[in-house]
Image 1 (cartoon, one colour):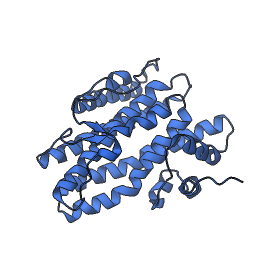
Image 2: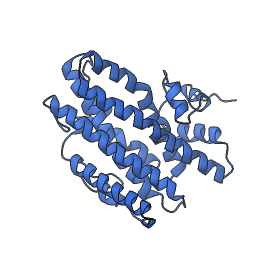
Image 3: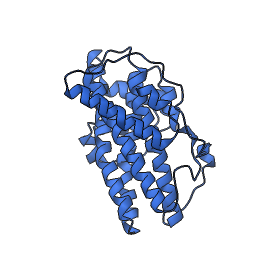
Image 4: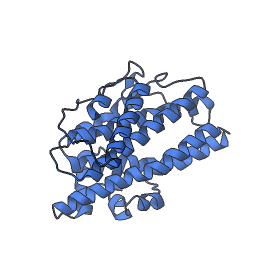
Length: 266
């Protein structure tokens, strides 16, 4: 089921399939007849539509956020992030089945994938309300890099994707909401508020299962997190941080503040 989502190119079709498979998983769990966790060979890269054109981050056009065109470009960029998030969450389900995990692990990531699918569609609706659509502008080609880098390392995937990249969304979304509120764009404000509320849980799932695996192997979560982020994340973490929402998601400051500086040799 996860690989079928990953192999679907069109964004609306991908998210429809994601919703359907999530519903099947939940229904089976509720009936006391959970679907079996099989084995799969997920693709190195998920299927993508012909548009948007995917560019090196340095080549993606920059637009002023205060203009209407800039706000539409921002919506497009966030929609692209959400589509990648759909695939990231189905990929973690398909890729690491050799590591035995409780059923709750799959519950969490199916729920996250289902919610990311909703987020993508909400943003597409906002784009269409502005006379645009997903694919109308070029997008960031590096969004899958974290998945590629951690394809053989479940703890690395948990550290970098939900606990760094999705946590960054908690930092930046309040300012985005304020920007669209100032512009009087109620539809986008409502969509971003839904996304902001639900992303806390996705970061929390990453933290929960990262700590679970550290406990299984009797490892210090903070030390391991620092090591994995320095290994797999390209660059330093940049403040300001939304410390309240990060704490709500199970990320204390001593996890991320040390990663704002280069590691010093002792």
